[in-house]
Image 1: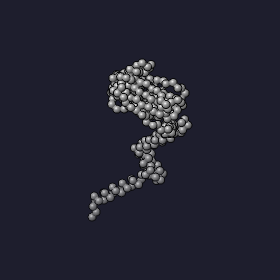
Image 2: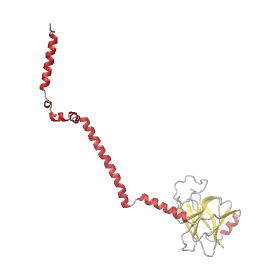
Image 3: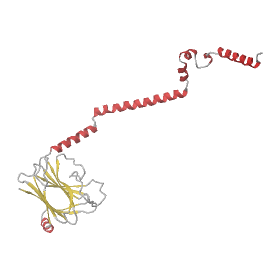
Image 4: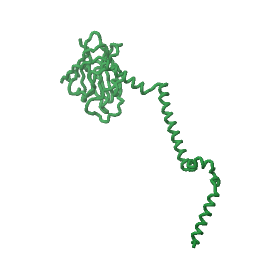
Length: 270
């Protein structure tokens, strides 16, 4: 005896298979049977909008990256045509260093101190231009050229009440004038916060009081250092290293409030 329910299920299954077999791929809009047969997986993937959007964004991102790389690659070519500023600067610094390395060595000076403050001040008050005021923030540089009849330069100085910075440099540039001259400049160093800081004064450019020495012909004999010239006379001598100009620097750039009265003299010795 045949189960009726089984027969019903069998008939329903046969009917479903018949309907499915009557359907074709072309019944679905947007998909052709040819594309489906050739690459059904690729076709289905191409209809996925999320993947299309991702692909477009990635492509755009890669385009921007490529543009950036290409623009970066063009920069060195432009700099090469117009000149590489950084390379030129580095070359200039190298040349300056080499030039300074070629300068003859400078011997240290012979220096001394004397307690005869009153005697020196009394004597220098009678001499013209031997007593000057170095104003706060100022740097006074005395230019002393070498002379054929001398063998060394000597100096003495003292101050009233407070100390002052002092240093000596030598400029190897050939001498064009035998006159002793004085140059006064204002300090451009805005980093000084204390009125009278302890320790050495920044050396740097003897003309402008800056921290960098621009003159490649300039050699240092005595670095700028604060001297207790209000307590004793400071003096010294230095033998000519060759033709050039001594620069004796009296530095009051570290003082924000106090002017310094300076007594000094410079002379040649055979």
